[in-house]
Length: 566
Image (tube, rainbow, N blue to C red; front, top):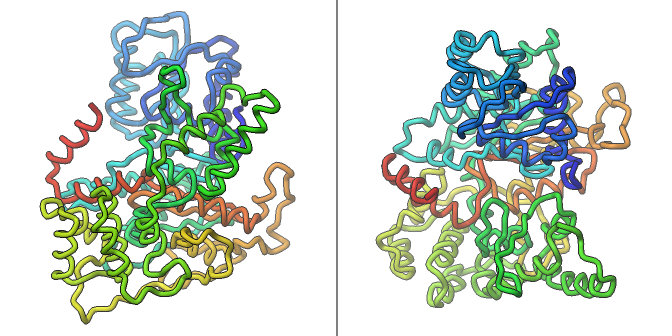
């Protein structure tokens, strides 16, 4: 396995695939073909290499939907999603003239009866194995998962959505497959919100589906709750973190540079197109991604010198020169906007700003991009928990977005107060005191979810604000103080499992600073592993575009998606 894939979620996913699909393959010594859909292609690419598959006697990997040459003497493994489109493509391979000698079928999730019956009707004599392996999520990083579904944002938050209920059902099914892969049966809690019900609905769905899943488990015995908690929260719970100009390397790179599918493209010295993949297979990237940009700026020149001296360059990975290139491409730091964005409502010394408007106006008068000005206006509004209609109109005129005011107004669909009457003061959540923590002056903002992680680990979450949909075991204590009877012997490979797991799911997308928080809390506590996930990962630009699109009709949204895929 690759360096970055030998721990965390990627290791867990690869182990699950080996214990199911690969274990079945090993029973017959012949070489096989592996056929995948778009989702399972991404899933497999995230946790293994072609060489890993070759060593398990898988000789070719094919696309389920592309035209393929028949190989009637070989057996084929189908790893696919349980959708009508996938099942129809599978049936077409065997219905008239079989393309392969036999089929081993593995679904990522529960296959509906009508699809299963169709397969039996046309292909029963060719199917040797048909299993559901419960793995309908993407292991993005060691402690980060997604469902690879950015469209869920519109489905849940658009007032014109026609598939909200179905989307929440799907998310619940996918969360259950995550828990199954991790072999966890967690207690479920959600953030109570008087404006929004989505977290509560999802918590109920997940809990019901977990009960059903563990009643029907293959082992024929009912599984008890494990030392794990699942917390469900909505994006509107912290609107600040995904809009900020974050000053750590990974977040800043994805904010300021056009990085698509974790791939950074640039021109080499000779003018040729080059690319660097930013993932955990590269330990250099893992080492630098969560560091403050100032620290990275200091470290990269030192690394260049070291490599020049040793004349060695890490082989086939992201090179130091790639990283240096990325640093150059990042625009010079925008001091004023950074101050507004990194110190919402407080100045560099951490003192509460009496008049945030005075901090904001210079930003609006400066020739920054419209997106940056919108971000600054939003942060101003968030810091005050809303503003008056009159004040908002003035701000919109300043930014010159009279025709695109949805960038700001549509946050109300997430339950975030935008327009409030002068007498209205909403109760802001109390934050942890971090004044003693060592941070750079302009990057003191801590995502709200980090407070939640720390409170959960210390068993301090308020049960009124975070009701239990189902209780955790009495011995739950994320800080690792599990009762002696329940402590297992620590394995050298992963001593963290002697404690517990905290799984956090954010409805509506997560940002890079929230991902970083999961690693920071895990590192600080050691006995509790924090895993965070969502339908997708946000950048400030993608979130603003999603917010603006919330007021579009379904057909208009479809057109936007088609254009972006073109």
